[in-house]
Length: 242
Image 1 (tube, rainbow, N blue to C red):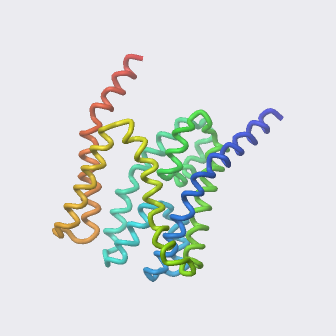
Image 2 (tube, rainbow, N blue to C red):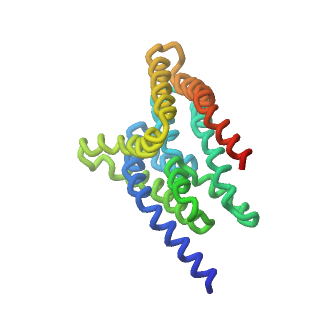
Image 3 (tube, rainbow, N blue to C red):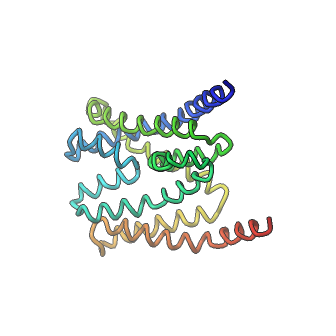
């Protein structure tokens, strides 16, 4: 009885913690559905895009690359590089689960996004299998349902509202980035450097469309290793002392 009550409480916490993320996901998903339709994707392809890929930044990037006529191989590589961070996110969350719960790790890893991982990290004391599953399943469901709605009814919306929807994903990323910038000048430095690198690569026109993003990711990530090297060493030193 006590165990059932605990599970119910964990499910309820998952529902409550998911609500702000769902509100943020809906306009971004609507925008993706609308943009996918405008780029000539079929309804089924658009829905499968959100169900199977489920990575907002990668989906919007892939749409831009598709519209620019970039080859599928380059798109897959760019998406892969952009989503490499999810491996580290999954590994970070895995330590919170018991051995018999590890069978659910592939499902949990699939449900990880920048937003769900960030919220989970801020609520480490609440992390449990019921909490995570409810939270992540609701987020995923909202994303593909919002995509469907955007595809079906997006054009009915006023033009001004259609344009405003497209900034939803950037607003979500800003909400995640700004708290980190406030805590660390290095994060601000790396963000600025990354933006400058991409702008230079994009406007130089040296590389084919799509490769500017791929190279921008690789160069920025390499610089990030150098920028945050001291932080990692400090953490290792503190761990050794403890």
